Structure formats: C-alpha cells, structure tokens
Length: 289
Image 1 (tube, rainbow, N blue to C red):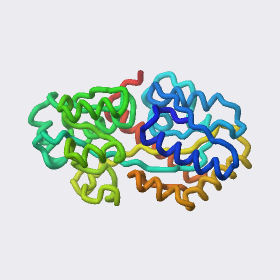
Image 2 (cartoon, one colour):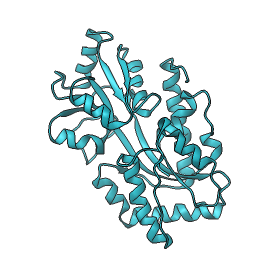
Image 3 (tube, rainbow, N blue to C red):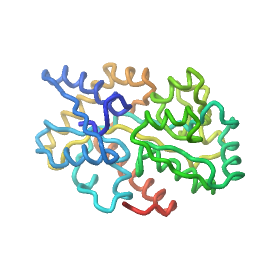
Image 4 (cartoon, rainbow, N blue to C red):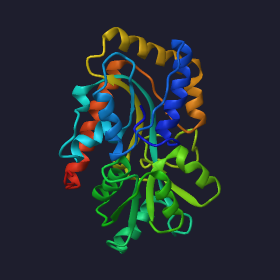
C-alpha cells in the first residue's frame, strides 16, 4: 500500500521495491495506491489489515510521524499499530523558488520576506504534510511572516510556483529535477546536512547558515502490529538483499537516497522523526484539526 497517488516519489520507491520482492518471493507483489488525508487513509487501511504479511505499508513522514501532532482524531497510532521493517529512502527537501524571483540564496529570501511581512506565500502538498511543516520550520527559525497555501499534491503546487503564484515551496529532488533542468525553477538550498551526488551544485541549509532547516520525507516499509516475528525478519532480510542487489543504485539514479538498516534502526528513526515534528508543531502554535 502506497498512501499517495501514482507517480510521486513514495510510489516510485514502492514500485521498484515490489519488483524486487516479487522475484525474491516468487509471487506478484502489487502496489495499491490509496491517497487522501495526507496519507492517513492508506495508513489506516493497513493498520486494520490482517497481520499475516500479505498487506504492508510503504509509509512516509506525513502519516507516520507528523499526523499524531496535527490531527485531533487519528484512527491509528503509528508507534502502536505498526511494526517497522526497514527504512528504504531518505528524501531531503529542496527549497525552491521560481526563476523570476530575484533572490539567489536562503538569506536573500528571508530578507525579502522580512521586508514584506505577510506578502510571500509558500505552497505545500496539503495542510499537515511534511512540506507544510517545512514552511512552518522556516517561519519559526527565521521569524518571517509568510502565508501557507495548501495544494492537493506536488504537481499543482509546482505549477503555481513556476507561474509565480506562490514565491517558494519545498519538494523532493525527483519532483524538482525536471524543472531545475529547464530553468523554470531554482533551488536555493538542500535541506540536509551534506550535499548529495544527485544535486552536487546545490548548497545545504547548513552551508547557507540555516542549520535548523534540515528536513526530509522518507519511505519506510511497515507491517500491521502483531505480524509474526518470522515474517518481519524475512521481509527485512529480503529488503536488505534487494538493496545490495541493485535497488540502492536504482534509487540513487532517481535522486533518492537509499538507507536500509535493521528493524530497530527503523523503529528508532520513526520515534526521532515523531519527536522532531511534534516540536515544530509546538513552536509554530499549530492547532490540530
């Protein structure tokens, strides 16, 4: 289960992984896309599924780490209702602006926002998503007054960014690369603590002097709670073998950063992400819906 529409970065990971696991397991592994409500509809479906290994979720940050802090009534508890298997990818965000916006750095964008309080708008994949909270992170870490414009996914937000209807947004490398190549957008910084080979010329937010603005979405394979340990161990081992057998390279070629690791690594990472975004929500005075 991928809790987003087909074509996005999480879906790309899911389809590459499904192909590899189909070979390893000798049977079809089907990707089902069930988008909506910032990923929580698909996640809830998997949380309620039989814990027999036949239904797995390729979870992302919005439904697995952010939703507990942004939704009053979440029908599942990510820490209680899922068993992490493996973290597949890390997808650091790029801070993007339209090519016509006269800023060349994060500092210049912040200066423009401070000179025009309330005038600059940023877009996101939707209220309560990771890209929304990245904008809130910029706001609370720099003290700027900017407005949030939610969209129904990356594509419509990109369209309005290119047209100059919004002044900046955050998006993943695979989504941004075509627009950077044709010079319709510019990336001011990579929201990561080190540069990546997929975008070697783009400085990090640490280099730009804004170390608090690191942030990423990610893809993590999880199973419903109470799935037998033997099934979890096999799934983790087969994911690790797939990564070593060429999946990691396929992910890199698409601008995704492969991770891998143990089930405990995945569990610890998820807990850390939940703490991080809960603190951003608190500092931003965000009111749960």
